Length: 145
Image (tube, rainbow, N blue to C red; front, side, top):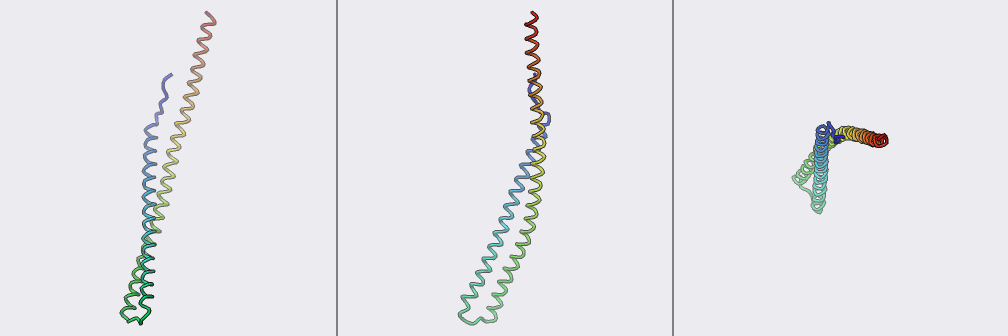
């Protein structure tokens, strides 16, 4: 009997390639989300440092210029935090989308793999059937001779 050959092997390779691409995109999305979270944490640290600066200056009276400068610094940091949080929300949505794309790619690959496995099992069953028929033919040929 001829050797097993899966005629959709090229489709399986494409599905594997699509899955790898989806995994890479998902990993990149996770990295971007992590980076955005670090940016938020960093900005919050800057805000805390600004408040600590207020406390160190608190031993004496604030001049109006110092108060305005410190308030402007905190407002600027809060603005960056708000922007970073908005960006984080967008990146998390993109991460969810890439996760869905990865699930679809994995599902598509699994479908082709299952088809290959089913055809391989059918091939093996047919091979065993063919082999048993050949053995039976040999046995019957020897018995009649």
